[in-house]
Image (cartoon, rainbow over all chains, first blue to last red; front, top):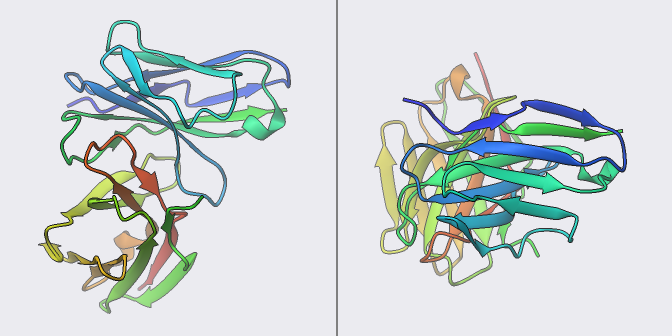
Length: 115
Length: 112
């Protein structure tokens, strides 16, 4: 069965540019999460969607970061005016049972490098 | 603030021996705890979990122990195999599962 799919797998961009990272969750999973993992660190929570709405965006570091999930399935993480400190692996995860204890299923991530 | 802590960045064990990975948490509202395993260039993969109503959960070679009073959990792998070599992340969440937090990870190396 298909797992969580993230594209692109790698993205290199210049400082100041705009990037979009895409996540296609497991079919039927209503909960979707974005995390960021820097070198030597664990995944850091960014935002959580329940259906189409962002139920918790408290982890977004600043207003350059924005995420959408317009139809309750695919999500896009958008970063404006990228900075070198944004370089990290961006992980997407989905879960079938929001509100119940269930593990998150992660994609392989998008490695973003800002030069 | 780091709510989930893995204080050992690395661990090396001999094949066939026991591996013990440790994790501490600070948020008393956490009631669901997980271990994930991560290989290079892949996302974390769920390994085993435990809810706060239990103190032990076993799945094959993997056992997770939870000590709520100490806010401590551990993962035991026995016997350890070279294929277990990976980075292991401890994670915890509250009742709604929308606030899962991760530790910094422990790199396990199992030597043949």
